[in-house]
Image (cartoon, rainbow, N blue to C red):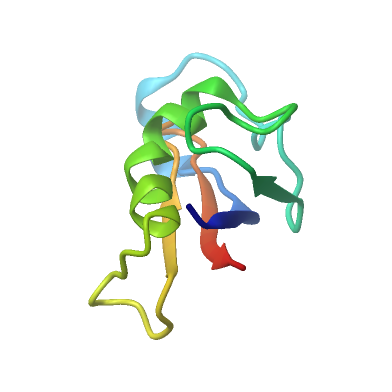
Length: 99
């Protein structure tokens, strides 16, 4: 089984959604930092310090990459872009297969 690397591309805020639906100030995700990298040794367990919610959201993409699959919409084989499902402040990740 291949390994993969997860890179935090961008922490975002959907301010229009926050303004309309939430009663509190929202800051970008505090678990991750832009540019942060994680190496996935096993698709069955998240790397140390990785958000469990984001891991659950991304696991299908991680499995595809580590099992040798590709995404037809991606420019590079073994690479995809995905995000966590936090609607007000999603984090965008790049997953890439590494040898």
